[in-house]
Length: 237
Length: 253
Ligand SMILES: Nc1ncnc2c1ncn2[C@@H]1O[C@H](COP(=O)(O)OP(=O)(O)OP(=O)(O)O)[C@@H](O)[C@H]1O
Ligand SMILES: [Mg+2]
Image 1 (cartoon, rainbow over the protein chains, first blue to last red):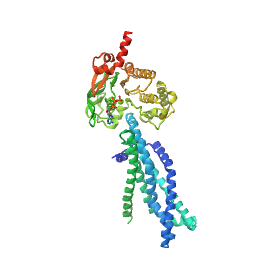
Image 2 (image 1 turned 90 degrees about the vertical axis):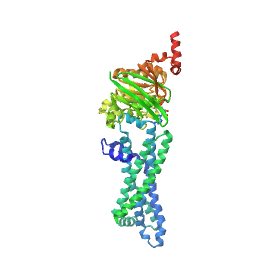
Image 3 (image 1 turned 30 degrees about the vertical axis):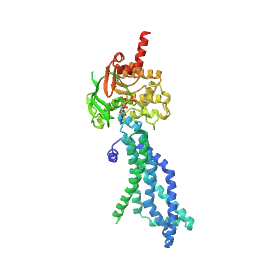
Image 4 (image 1 turned 135 degrees about the horizontal axis):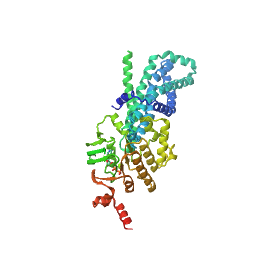
């Protein structure tokens, strides 16, 4: 219900472009350090992990292909979304929660301002739009991370690495991976807002809203991911 | 005289906690009414019912003859433009400066030019005596200052009806007097109708013509403040005992 209201109100002016931009910048800056580290590490670990396994089958030359496919189709989007959920959904839950318990949301309502639109719609939109960008960035860093792992073990040169990554990648690999991050961003924004907006029982409630926002949005991300993977496989075959 | 607010047989309970019980009240245009009552009797709840933040379980509330209940949101918002509400907690927007707090309703709801908005902000801040705080964040203000900024934000839209929830609680006696005088000035200048919830008889005497006392969700007294102090009702005598003693002392001396 809460999310449906989003679709009803998102198309009605005034559009909160200023607010959306402000939130996107804030979210981007807030999550940049942690997702950067994650990106590099996913790539490094995945390459180091897979190398001996592939070597056992004499298929080491598939390493760049394997790493890039796993990162772009699955690991990049899902891990970025989970970290984003931990960082952002809790923040939105706490922020809106404290606005609720200190009567700031009521104050907006009595000044004839639509707090749902001003506070919630702008946050959901910002999350939905920023997560795909963050994911692309994480994917890129992960590929760089993987290259370092490969470089350290067999000194493959960058050009060769990039060639073999792009040769194996098709557009059809990139699109579903990025498309699903719109869903994930929407989940993070709306679960955080929902929990915060409906906070009750004072400051205790704010803490509860923020934790339960992380738990619920992470679970939903995994669940929706499973469904979307199923749907993509079904569409492609 | 038009009746601005009419509360008709309103009852409100939270689960088993009955807060308002069959309460009726009429407030006419230009009238200034104070509401007294012990902590937890539902004074704030009553004000929130009047602006439609809470819904009574039974009964009706009318603003200029139109029921506040079950109104579509755009009609409710039209009504709310005419009403100012000072929250007991001031409810300033944490993430905005004092200036942005004051500008917020003006920019979003009304179509004023930047110059007009700036003029209005400066004027109300002068009225509450806090011109210097214009670029502060709410977190860096004292409790009394927050209250005064809250008051400034309430009056900046020049509403017809203003509901003040404890405008002077937590302020020193001098500021209390200043704020009370400010409220009366507004009443005269803008011809506002006001409902003031307070524990402070000094403030009530300055701002209001009529007093209402709530007890256990019901009206215990309704009438002029001077009669309130002369009443022989035990509850009222206890409630206002300090003031009554004071009164006698000054009469005798
Ligand atoms: N949102 C709410 N949910 C549940 N109970 C509430 C809610 N708001 C108020 N109450 C209850 O209603 C009763 C009256 O509260 P209210 O805030 O109106 O008191 P008050 O008369 O304004 O007191 P005070 O002088 O301390 O401000 C209290 O018992 C309170 O617990
Ligand atoms: Mg109260």
